[in-house]
Image 1 (cartoon, protein in one colour):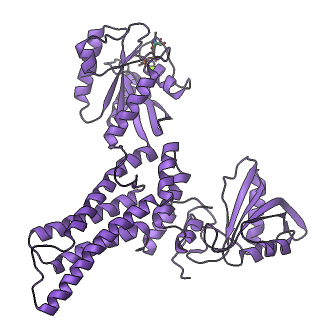
Image 2 (cartoon, helix red, strand yellow; image 1 turned 135 degrees about the vertical axis):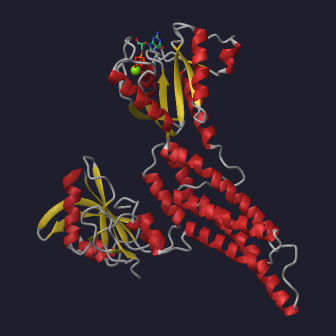
Image 3 (cartoon, helix red, strand yellow; image 1 turned 90 degrees about the vertical axis):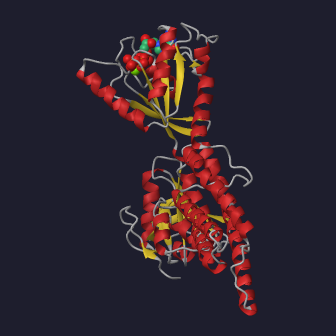
Length: 481
Ligand SMILES: Nc1nc2c(ncn2[C@@H]2O[C@H](COP(=O)(O)OP(=O)(O)OP(=O)(O)O)[C@@H](O)[C@H]2O)c(=O)[nH]1
Ligand SMILES: [Mg+2]
């Protein structure tokens, strides 16, 4: 097998070896930390024989069938290193497609490290980042969309993010990409036929009808739907920044602590308590949210407070959503006017106005201006109204991200910036092909654009790939995956 490129995983001691060889590799698949078990994973040529050389029951291991478990000790000469269970996988029925084994060692820092050191002494080399998945790709076990889904699952911040990645792992995106690719190929085949036919007949191929135009139009519409899906996927994967803002003493820190379910921010009746902003992660309906509590917004003579306010205003500019906390216990009319002014000033960023201290002063639900401002009434003290607030936060973020599940494609959606860039390129090619046809250009001028679209889609699944693409992708993985 050809060596694709040398590894430079940047993870200390990982500089030897090449992605693309099939030599025996080993790495820890679990974090080296205090835990019940540590999993050391090995794969590659002669790995069963090599491991037998440092195992207390070499013959049992050598003869072990695929999908079986062997008990014994990892040994180094006469020294016992750890008592382990080895799950044996035989090619091609393994994650990588090669012979491979998962060694369950005792947990903690020491056992896994000692087992790994023994393996390195006996001919294994440290696996590079993502090298197990890379081999799975090379051996046709997964395409690139599925490899990326593995990476997504490992780094998912919420259960929804994990669930969406799992749908890509099961091939939903791959199938959709192949379907679109076939539409382009269908159009190209029809164009080729027309060109062959016109050559034979001596007829010009610049007929008004572009063969396969319908297929290209259908492909373009499906590509656009995929393109739209990316913002929603990004929301569930990377999350959003929600900034709690408002006047001093409105109850911002109280609400922050309530949403975080933690007494993180200092709460007091003294206005101007919070100076520097403070943040924490929460999850609402599966959306990871970076929630920030900020300094109360007001004109202040205190230099330190002014600095805090400036920093808070800076954070507002980065926000995906501003939760504007209004003090319901102060004059109601002024509260609503304050909300209206704030929303007007923050054009572009969604603002969710919250009437706080509803336990002291219930919101004027009959007031037309109150209804128009779409205020959400809560009490940061009692927790009343919190469920409605959760729902409003989730819906607002989903709406700005266009997060409704794309219909008609059985949920296929993009999961990475790499995929998005290639879909954009394919869209550009399809649009170009259609406009060339609209300008009356002949089919042989249009065909290269369609071929380019096919190439872009091939890069998404990995049918068309270069060492650079693969290196950039698999270097994002952790060692052991
Ligand atoms: N009754 C009642 N009191 C509240 C509520 N929310 C906050 N408070 C009180 O209002 C006061 C101010 O609360 P904070 O959460 O510190 O207000 P803040 O907006 O963070 O204030 P600054 O940090 O000074 O800008 C405290 O005494 C809280 O106990 C509420 O829903 N009901
Ligand atoms: Mg505060």
